[in-house]
Image 1 (cartoon, rainbow, N blue to C red):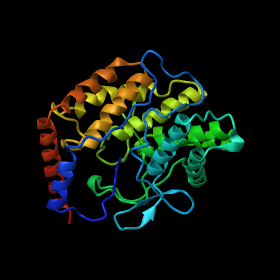
Image 2 (image 1 turned 90 degrees about the vertical axis):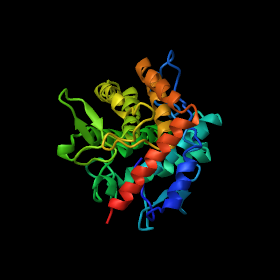
Image 3 (image 1 turned 120 degrees about the vertical axis):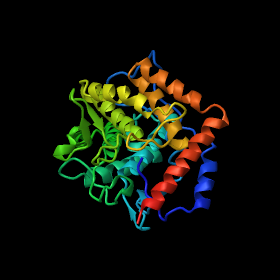
Image 4 (image 1 turned 135 degrees about the vertical axis):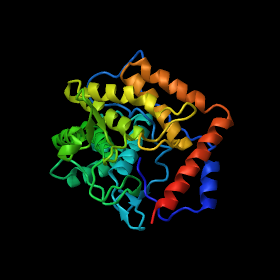
Length: 324
């Protein structure tokens, strides 16, 4: 998940962040078990329980999530809005809501519909949501589309469609998925290999980044859309991402992307494990689970965590010193 910093962190801030990396966050997997994969039809709970991740979401007077840019200005981030919407859907389902009383929707479902309504109204003619902020790490200027945003909004729109029956939400899903799978060369979000298999790019750039968490979040959206409308459009992308997993393995930790050989933060490493575990269950494929188990083993004991935190700190310091 590509983020923006308000100010450049100093050495003291980086040290505190490194120490905080030793405290492992939790990303509970909420996917079906391997032996009982999800059935076709409207999606139920999202594969990850995002309630802890989105507990600090900031809402405006309209109940919409706002995100701060590096300049201090706020903007609508479709990833942040979607993560929050999906967490509210999980909360409603855990409270016993089954969508059988649309006239008396719980507050959490209304929160989902608030985000979905804004996303539907602001989807552009290409089927996406352009980011108004740059990403200096990858040399990306404002105006880019994100495969992660496209996939997450698909998951949100599908649940809004299930809650309301409004066809426009399903139409928005299909437009978002089409842009996600459009080649980078045609203004889309996917990098294709020689076999014609897409890798959804969270932050499209040249050269490509191959950000792992964003690609798997995008994959979940494709998978859920396929369950809703039929077809197996997720297969080639799933195979491409799964076969790329060894490249993210540093032998003691994981990488955030394939652009830089820097260890991910503990938060992202833990998120990688949860995402792969959910993918293995959703696709009934033990190969994802085998990799997740190996990466889980890296978190045991403090030595690998310290090594990863130190490596991450060196990378951020080098990145900071390289900026004008």
